[in-house]
Image (cartoon, rainbow, N blue to C red; front, side, top):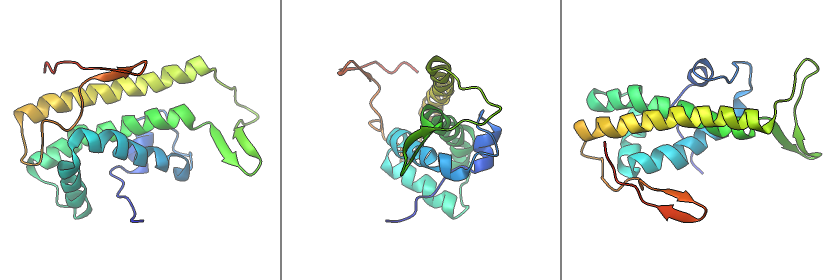
Length: 166
């Protein structure tokens, strides 16, 4: 399996979220990958996503692509990855089972507090996504397609379609 290009640095994640800089990168790397695969790629569409990744790898992002990357994609990856990591970061699965880590000088937070933190990151992600959709409408690029991401949401197993009004 090919290695996946990670579009943000660990410093970008830890400087812009409540995730501490001393958290082992291996603990949140999967959250960054998941965000890119299940949030960013469907939003951009495969063609635009692949162009961004290819240009990023070659340090060749420029023009509208660089503006899109710097102002929207990076922020969405940061806050989307934080949302994913915050919902599961306290847990570890090992040979001894599923455990929740805790140090001697720490206090365990409630599920409601974790849910609040997850929702705060989700709101930031959604804000950047909304701003990106406004921006891309004014600055279309050839790789962008209108059918990249469904605009509705699933509630209780039902898909509710919403009109785009940006």
